[in-house]
Picture 1 (cartoon, rainbow, N blue to C red):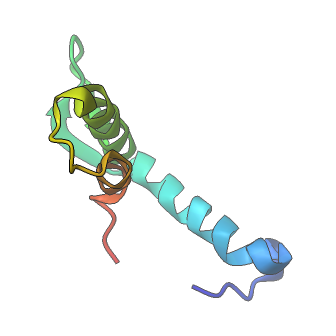
Picture 2 (picture 1 turned 30 degrees about the vertical axis):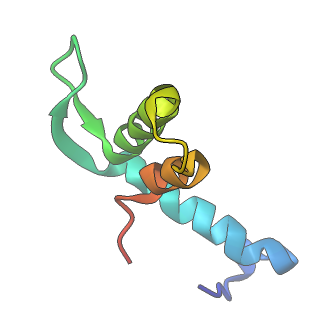
Length: 82
């Protein structure tokens, strides 16, 4: 994901900053699901955040072998397509 634009010249962090800018676009993808108590549709960023927090909240009920760090990471990125 090399970015050659001079607007994004952050040295070795250029790819990291470009990725952060790219995932910000998830806020603009509307889902069919409504936000509770509203008529507003949630966006994909909200959905992923909510899923990750739910996973962390339910962690005490998971089997001992479940890697909750990995579960949380997967919850945060599960809707990213490339």
